[in-house]
Length: 137
Image (tube, rainbow, N blue to C red; front, side, top):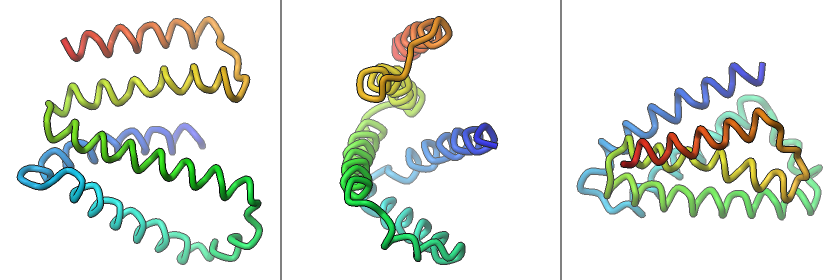
């Protein structure tokens, strides 16, 4: 089931990039990010309310709060940089560089989460890296 959600995530990310590139024209990138963030927050809390998941808030550990907060800050920084890059560059190039985050994530997962590099992940990382450079040239 994770694969279905991962594919849907990729599809929605692609749609997001195209809609954002069209919508950001003539708009300050920071303002555009703030508008997008408000929409995401309203949607996320709407889903929480619809699924009655808000009761789990009290059970979240201090450690989880810290890391979810840090993740939120990283997401915000990523979105601010992404929208500025999208405003300044071609969507196809910006998205290609943005998806290089896969390689960065693999390296960070190995360092911080002690996940193992396999022959598959090494080959995939090399191909993604090469593909990123091909797309931006």
